[in-house]
Image 1: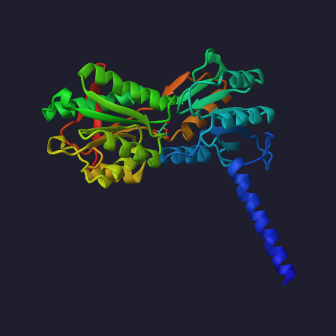
Image 2: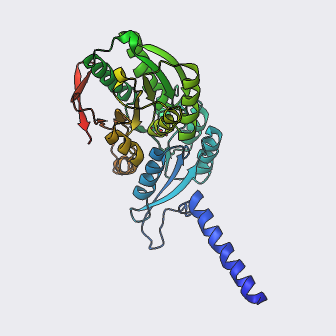
Length: 347
Ligand code: AHR
């Protein structure tokens, strides 16, 4: 009996260790030779956290593309929403002398020193998704991600076109704004897109507060806004998780979400388009418009690494094309700075 218990305990311990190894290092191998003797590329990937469905899909895309089958040894670190953790991870990658560092930064500032250390060690750095704001741009090789300000501009143009079509005067548009993580490129760009439009069109921006890109905070912030203001008719959420939380708060307050502002409905708009529940809400009319933010950067990063390996110089900034999703059939395109963008109708 005692022997069985001991064996079970050992097996359990081994299983736990295996799972722990996968969560911190998909492969701990840091040499450039795989078990079959084939050359592999060692990449240290620092992900900022796991705040949203977008982020989980993004992580999965990276892990799949930079897999052993594709010739990579990936050391993956989750920063748990803390820049300090990400900096520690980068220093660990430098010590391990990885071939490439891939960084998905939480916020833009504070990267100069550690990126200088990577440069001094001769390790190319690829920035993915959000950007870094450093004085010397040669500290990173290239960046791939979304044009977050354009996403915000397209959304503001959609709100403008829709409310104009509904004959709603700009001063009768009362917006509350649930922001993303403050200081992140996604927040800064989407916020600029809205606040410039508020200034241009004369909309009434009642309040702004961060919902940290999470459902829980989206709900809390919206509940607070509803306690403070009784004339809200548009909620601008900076991602789908916040929108789902905001809708819960609106419905719990006994109000209706939808695009019929004149009939007293509160119109919700958001960003991402990857969350299944949010896409269902879009079809049901609970969310009126979603600006796409594409998370599938794994193959894009893989292409960039392959270009560098082939001795080519990739473009410094690599933007992903994105659309607007809506179930409001009347708006088929929006115009930003003289360029028109198609709206993808979802129903
Ligand atoms: O940086 C991309 C943003 O981060 C996504 O919109 C959001 O959902 C995520 O957490």
